[in-house]
Image (cartoon, rainbow, N blue to C red; front, top):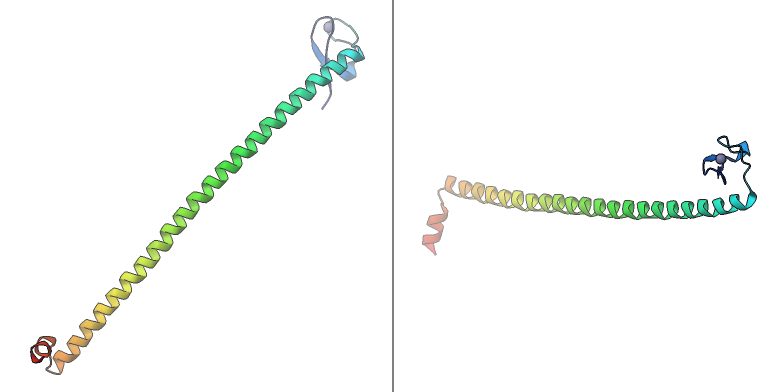
Length: 117
Ligand SMILES: [Zn+2]
């Protein structure tokens, strides 16, 4: 990007390549340029700090997103595990039921078994 010069006379900003102010025709002095470069450096430093802030904010947002994803994954895992537990319980119940049906088919019900004890 072209360096911008502030006119010593009228304060207008113009590109360094123009050498003279397009408004009043005053040539810029190197001393003035140095001063301007200093202020440019300040602006650059400020911009850099803003950029760092932005990156920090981005990282913060990213870690927040990772946290949310972790929580969601944990919930999904918990749901899967509880679903497996429930289905295995249901399986056990079904097996138990089938066992009792098998017994009752043979004429031995679980109630009779209990009364025999
Ligand atoms: Zn000027």
